Length: 160
Image (cartoon, rainbow, N blue to C red; front, side, top):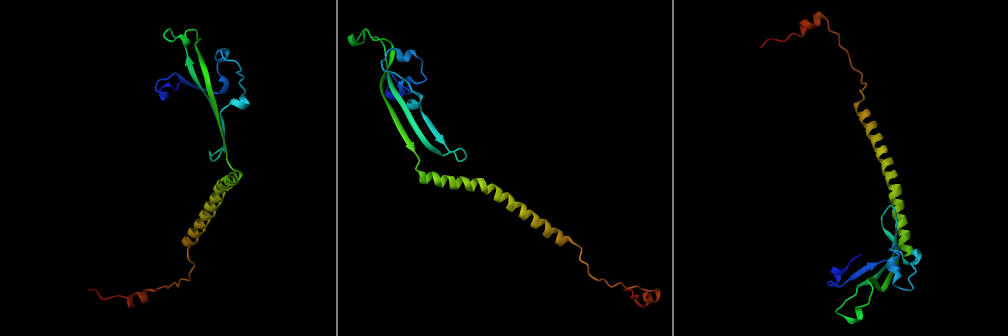
């Protein structure tokens, strides 16, 4: 990765240590380059449901691009190459107590959906039962009065 802009135009490049996963030509000009995926990879382990990083190993190598220069005697016979300056490794592991807390939070998320779904079903059932009970016809005894024509005459009201 070209990081020259970050270094005020100096020909600086980042790679994985020992040019891991790089072209074999990068290692041809430097002795002792033995890339090992176990020792030189950049990786991180993430808790899949919460997305929290549990372990990180950041490894990178700083390289300078060298090329022949007629203006500087020291660089007249230098091959075009990336010259490794140093490589850095930074590892971070989450503490086991924090991991235990994350497992608890994950369990809450796992069971939370099920509990909420069951609670929603119970609530819906209770609302349905209450609605059916409220709409149920009330069975009250109604008194039926049968009127005869004679009764009708007695009930006549005076017209206004």
